[in-house]
Image 1 (cartoon, rainbow, N blue to C red):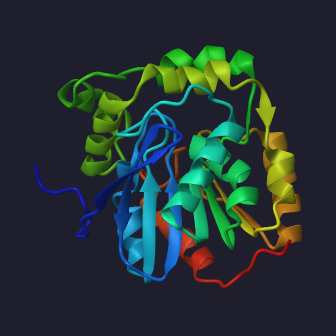
Image 2: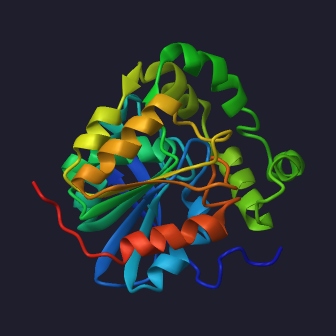
Length: 274
């Protein structure tokens, strides 16, 4: 197939953290650093189109394969705090001083929890999973587990059919991510991470935070949380922005709508205020 790298190939790196392999992709070689955390059942490859744009702003961009995804090992603990510590330790080991931390969905939740450890200058959250209760997790785990471990050619047809606005490379990399993903990680989030709510932590973050929210029918953030975030984020220099015409995977189906908002946010200079 035609190369799916948006004109800039990533380099693959590996590091061992607490006897667990952490795999990552890296674009660019700028002095400032952006870290990307993907959502459940995806991989670092999900940023294939986002990362080169950021790297061209003179950043080094690192996207981690989250635990149990891509080429990274699975963890035995699945709570958000443990995942955040794992990512923070990885950044420290690699010598990454994070300018901007960007997380999508589950990666957004981990970004919120990791921010006080990593201390980025700013965050950008893409339709983040800000809360989860065990009843809802039990209801959706089967849906999110569909296609795990299956070959790319098995999942590509239905991924294409369900995501008509995705670029063909988004479909390919998602299919690969499903093949690589392990059930332990997905069950870990939805069944074994407990019930949690990060809205208060998000509002209290000293780092200015952009919270991008998908269309009303597609976002994973409930209405009461949306209203709270819309009124409170700006009090600390943050921004709440709902973008119509996007689904939960805003950087895929809504790339041309979402990317300008991310770029505008990143180009503003800010500093951690605590």
